[in-house]
Amino acid sequence: MLNPLSLDIETAPVKGFPQEYALQPWRVLEGKAQIDCISVAKASGEAILVTNPKQFRALLKSLAGKTIWTWKGTFDIAWLIAYGYEKECRDIIWRDGMIFWKWLDNSQLCERRPAWSLADGVKRFYKDEKWCAPFIKMKKEEVHAGENDQYWETRAKLDAIMTSRVVVAVHEKMDQQRIDSSYITMNGMVAVAGSWVRGVTINYDKIDVIAPAVTVEMSEIECRLGCHEHGQEAHHHMGVNGWIPSKVFSSPKQLGNLLYVTWAMPINEKRRTPTGKPGTDKAALTYLADENPLVTEILRWRQLNTQLSKYLRSPLKAREYLGNDIVHPSASMFSTYTGRYTYSSKTSKKFCTGVALHQWPRQKEFRALIVPREGYKHVEFDAAGQESRLMAEASGDLAMRAVFAEGKDFHSFTGARVSGLTYEAFMKGKAEGNSAIVGNHGFRYQGKFTNLSCNYRIGVPTLRQQARVQYGMDVDFMKAKSWQDAFHNSFPGVKPYWKTAVNIAKTQGYAKTMAGRRMGLMFWKGDDKWSTDSTAINFPIQGAGADMKDLAIQEIDKLFPEFEFWFDLHDGLHYEVLLDTPDSRLIECRTMLDNLDYLKWWGVQPTVPLTWDASVGENWSKLKELN
Image 1 (cartoon, rainbow, N blue to C red):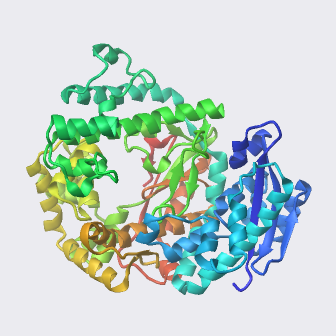
Image 2: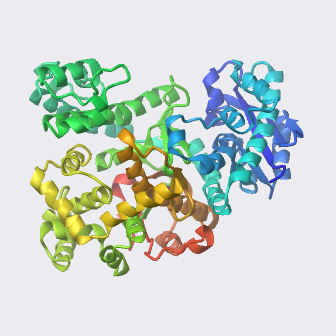
Image 3: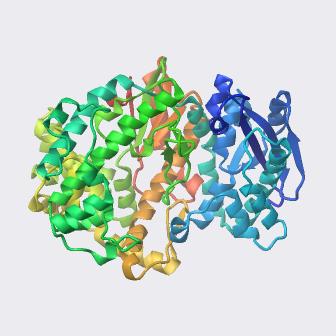
């Protein structure tokens, strides 16, 4: 690690095409964008630069078997894959300086002042060096891609050199467990970069089918709350483009007037905006919903409006811009503080090129919008009851552990407690297709919601709001309380874990997962106490879920290279697999995931079985679990 090798590429649109194509690697396949140069350099300052495209492949072949660092390297790798160099990329051991730094400095402080660019890394670790200021100045210069070759060639060399230097500085501060686990995260870079280039196919015919249900419910909420602006004729134009949402709920000013003037609701001083106005954001509305259930309707409206804008209208904008049915959501690895991916719908503020996959709605009708390419089928590997299993591991709750040790269906177990049935009777009804058990909002669904919500600290009013807003279930206070009571009476070790987790994080200064991923915690007093305590409780569970995902991607990519990574969402990994792939091959992969050697990779052996489900189908809404 004394003098690591780093790589940087500079890209540009082909002459005559828009500037933004320099950020869109799939444009290479259209003949509209290109790599201008590739630089490889060391921290010591030695650097080579290749500008002749005929030499790109030879350069990559010369790096086979070597460890090569990048900065936000999925970008660089995606361009190389678009050029047809995927095999050469797979022969290189890729590492990422930004991800490495996140594994070191992931903390509340960075969450409040996010700064993970290469320039910020140089300032963080080398601010007193004489070469720091000139480098920062150069990075701020506004030079168009493809113009001023000398600038971009110099920048490619310096970016590679500075990446190596930041990596050296981070390495000096890291413990071995975090180094090893960060490498697992980075081993998924080629798979993720390839998915960005290939993109996601959207079934646009389904959008006009879904839109009316969304807009009608929005209209009904507006009518109930007296904020309908469009008259009865609006009911005849509920398509994705014909509906105009009420500005009352989307305008902070108008919503504030409705809440605090018309409805005369109390103002929470802790929830004021930076300008001193009463809050109208999600957090403020959540508090207000405790006072008035009508506010829950507004929260639901906002969720529906998000569905309309992000998952119905955004794909249409992307098709209009891209000219085809394939969108290209850009994955950011280790994007959230827990280590999860997020997906950007844009490569710049103006142009819509993808969709926000990491927030995709649960409903089957929305999932039907995403379809595999022709000749492929959709396969999902889902970490079964992931957060509940990880809670059983962290809390040591004997009853929860027993459920998993005995191979019981955890959501059905809680569903049985909610319904008042024995587990045996519940499973019999489930097998028979009893609608009260397996229906859209049946007892198993209620059990799943209860498990996912009550793992962490949540009050009954907020539980009700989540049921209504996120899951579409209207329940009264007593019903929600009965669900919460059923959970904690069944699993009494969860609440003590909360206290223990907070005490450990206070002592250490950070919360930690089994794999060594950390979240630095420092705001333990005043208004921040509740959120800090909650992070101390949540992070060891949710962060471990991200660790599981990273390891699974690494092993699938290594052992099942014919499976093409597509995207990840929550505790599921989604792949495009050739239609003639036999189910036995998918089951083989699932068996491998069930038997991951966590002791080898994390240095820790979980005592609760961390199992996976495998499902396959023609699209996301028609997946069927493999037995």
